[in-house]
Length: 223
Image (cartoon, rainbow, N blue to C red; front, top):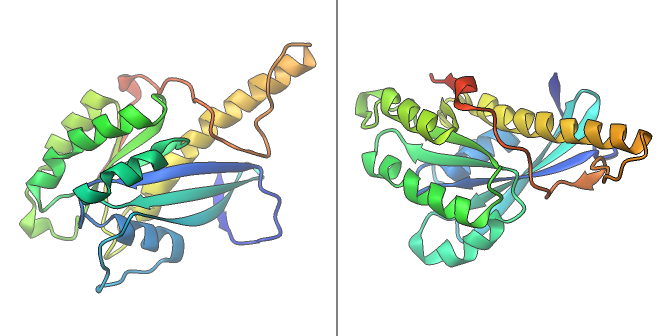
């Protein structure tokens, strides 16, 4: 349904804001670099404050521009980065599968996110550094159980060898698109029948999205 595009002259139909959150050094910046530029930097340094990259995709002949915001994981930047959660329609909660503490902190990050972002944001739990299988400290089943309990999508990734990186972002973006395009369809139908509604197409999407699908539709993919 989707394809990656880089045509700057294309008219943008939708703009989605997605944030990356989690402890420092779990690989958020590397995931973003791999997804946006297909790069991996062995000398990557900790993010200071907030940075973002964009990626343009075509979905059902609509051009979707995604702004992915990479937030600093250090405590001293928390007050700064929390402001950037507002307006986000998607979020990746990232932990390092080789560091148990980063997984245990996911609950804290999730609480902070839910305190600053729209309650209906599309959420993905991401276990990064799956290439460090011999050092695994977080069993996949533990993460699956947590994701199912909190109604999150879940996937394990490796920014180093690209495993599941594009799939992770596309899963979140596709779910956002599905929800928003459904709202646009309803808006169009209401407009045609004389109802009152706001057409979302061609605007930056910062509106609340419908409730996520029930737990029975939980999707899980791991490497």
